[in-house]
Image (cartoon, rainbow, N blue to C red; front, side, top):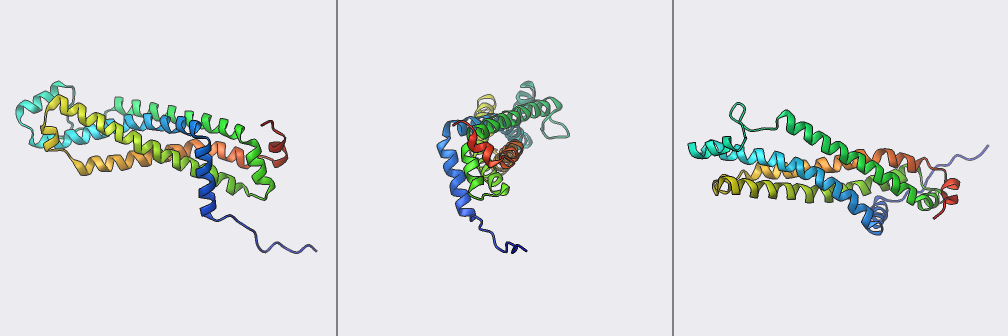
Length: 218
């Protein structure tokens, strides 16, 4: 009777983090494509959400002329506050959907390019969970970078745009805390989208047979 395997060597998380970071660095151009896709999608959401937060901060203290200017610009408060309408939500949903599809496509191409690398990992004893961790950590890096940059860009654009439209009153009544919360939420949204987009490609990579992967052309 064969002796049961009582212990298995598993790479520590520090090594997994290092490998995934180096993978992003080596494939910088492809990583930038995914990051920019996330940044563009999230910047639209941040632009919309932050814009409404700024208007909600300005509206209570606005004089009648400023309120009229806001209404003339096409913004309409509902129950005394501004928020996303059905059109805004639909546009945001479409942009995020396109973003996820783009991430899935980019990650599947990445799996194709990394047949030999994945096969080497598997031949050296890497478990399926190890391969999944590599892709998941790469997705977190890309999601955070894309979300951070895209959210910041969207917030800056909507802040400057509203300042130009409605004057310095926007600066005086700027809702710093709600806008900062929007920045955090949209950054986390980008990380979530990146993770959703990488699930299927990561599973494809993890289930790859080592012999098949090593026979693939470089």
